[in-house]
Length: 269
Image 1: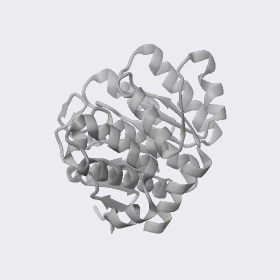
Image 2 (image 1 turned 120 degrees about the vertical axis):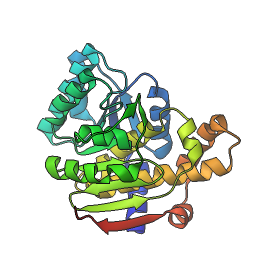
Image 3 (image 1 turned 135 degrees about the vertical axis):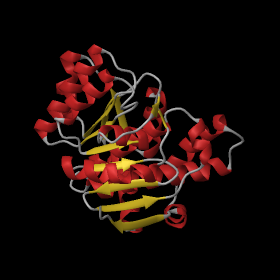
């Protein structure tokens, strides 16, 4: 499996997939730079007259609900509808799920367009699955292992891959799940790291659209390993951002295979 995941990393670098992002104001620059460093090509577009046409020419769509308003919500719906109609992979980041009724309503509408992958922190995934969770803005007040059952239910009901990110990342598909324990706690001090992970999943689904589970595993492995290596060179969150982008760009096969901490399980609930 580790070698397969590395082949996904190479595929992103070689194919440079176009990834359409409708994301929040806070992280646009971060996610665009991370996609470029990993080898993909980011597009940020949300204008109603062009959004459906944009989805038609890209390889994957990423929707992040971090900073909602009515105009952007309609953009998200138009894009998700088009991606679903064309059979293109699209990834949903339910930022702040459960925080407000409006946010939950938007998520309910977006879920009808059948996302390929849903990635969020534990509280967000539990909220999306309608499991009782306490949210603190966009930060999780639950650990990722608490959300495993919710993720399994969500994956089964929606027939999609669900990724719960945290100190341990859980990547769930029906009754099978994997854990990745790479990364560093310093990553939590940089805004938008989770949003960056979602964008990378979009790039990997673009080059591996028939195996969303493997694509998500590869993206989260790259994210965690790059963060881990970058943190070892960093004095704080500012320098971490620089080293993180450099590591995404320069990561070697030996580093990837040598650092990856991956386990597989069969879930039974």
